[in-house]
Length: 78
Image (cartoon, rainbow, N blue to C red; front, side, top):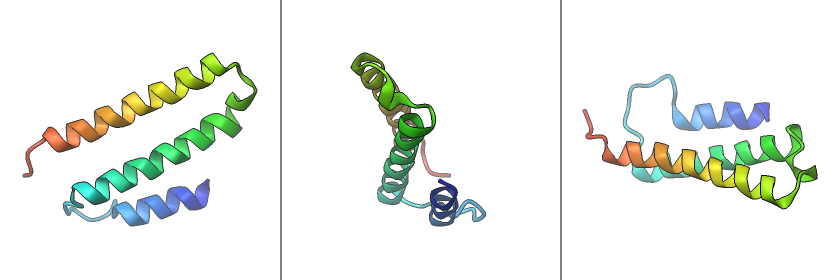
């Protein structure tokens, strides 16, 4: 998980003030979603929960990531 975090920070160029572009931001958010799913699944032990809880948390995660991606697309470039 630490390697995934450092890799995403490096790929996202968190220390530079640049525009990554919509394709790159989409890829980074998909990878962040995958990492979040792993955290939910293994560290929070969602795999032992009922299917309703599993679907609910994954749907909630998808809504959050979709909201972030939509906000990025709707925000004009500065």
